[in-house]
Image (tube, rainbow, N blue to C red; front, side):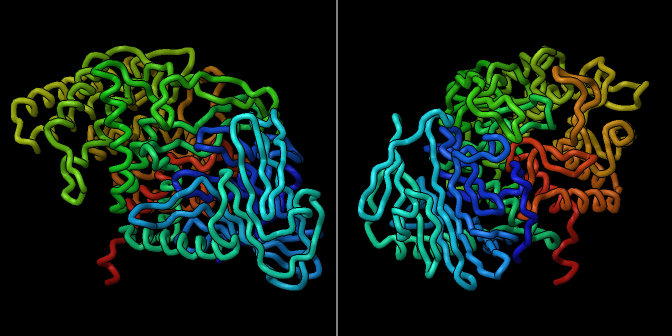
Length: 603
């Protein structure tokens, strides 16, 4: 179903759609402009970067402009990652732009080239369009040299060459000259490789096969009875954040969208956080989509082996790069001019002890699920035991915590909680593998950590579990205590914690992360996944109707295509933070699965 979109007033917006194929991706605005796309990987050079080019950016984009544009509609082909944008002028002339990255089975494997396909067709009248293709290299520093072939243009940079193959007039593209669109045209943008057949035939076949692939993929999801469209869109979006070459999962497609206006809380999320990836895997597993877990465990297994029983970083590059040194890209003004634009993320240097629980939690299902092509066994368990031993060593030591505080270290409750989860799940896995001595060992470790947390993280004055042992400040991450099974959600201490968090951190349906000021001051926006943790906690303690009301409010915070960023401003309802955010999309799935009526109520 199409959604008419208000055209932005010449400024960047997160009213964007995402297309991709687990190798390439792009963000597209309601005017059919590609405003963000990195090549050759999600964490690569943004050859289209207009999203961070400030207001009225004119470079780093791939635009299909309709002269006299007055309105647009944008929607996904149902249950697919194929995006359609319809543009109309005042006289009723209309053009439809179809965007996708090819993904389908061919020759016994998934075909997923680093390629973006754009197909244009006339909807009504005689639309007059202009094509502006303006890639740049080196974060906008380098304008390409353009060479022309019979049906293609090559964009030559110092480190890479990209090619547009098209049935549109090359002269009009080179000169950015408007022309009347009389029939369908195709634009295929990607590596400098020749196509083996007519571009229109190829683009049409790729579109058909890609639609078929995504519809079949969606058909296999075990969706809840209610909110099925919400869940399917969230699941497809999470799948698009998988870099299938290695199995890594990026936290978001973008860098440096501010968490809040003018705060300089601008971070690069185009890497694989072990924490975020666990929540993605868990959400997709709940829909019986276990393929992503299998792919991720390939990547994760190598991370664990690389660590050799030592400290593990909270994030890595999608090719397991360890050094993600943070740099400021001074040439780009940033989203709405709100810099800095950062490449890399200093958090790779942090100690974040919750990572050990996220590793074991992310792998645990592989020991129990008989559907998997390769179940985990003794060898994998021994590898995870090394992770558990490190969790035991560090669970009482200060760290930066899951919120990645840059200038403050404490023994964070959430970190201790996840160290407990590592030991608790190792005990369960050992039982599964019929290793009673190892099960007893890990259960003893888990019991000690649980006792420590329940006594030292409880603050009687606040009537809540707080953010660190012996601390006094409230933090939404303690809501995970019930989700990972440390505490009965009906325990009076947990119920009291939920009440205290609602009174302190919530603005209506929205929830902030914590109350204590950090390196940049007190948080002013809601962190979307915290709102979903709240929904989960309310449902678990029996406040189902309140949870459903909050969930409906969070659904209204999505953009017109059903996508979410990291943060929502409670005053304006505007989206902030990197996009699309896997944490937020996983939260949508988890809440829908938790709250939906059961299928047996209607069948």
